Image (cartoon, rainbow, N blue to C red; front, side, top):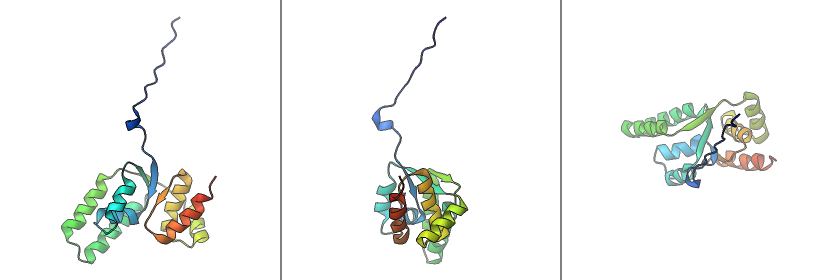
Length: 145
């Protein structure tokens, strides 16, 4: 009886999986709506696999609405939303109980805590421009073993 061959094909190093991160709305907002930290945001997400809780879609819509109300021309608001749609973001459901617990532990909104909960669940870095969330992430994610 002939034994079947086993083939293991490995792509060159340039095609290996990109490192994952959880990215929050503050980073996407800067990137999409040409804020002062746009270049930094672009560098942070470049070459990464992006993850976020499902609420990111609604937070982006809220930022777009605020930009529109503040007088950003509709064409630029639409361009930002189009750019968002072009980004591949792996969306995840997060545990409301985990978000609530982290919100209480670090004095965060449950929205911000959802990003921290996801980063904790996936055991990947969280990227944010939000000072309070960033400090909480440094404490919480640094404590995971």
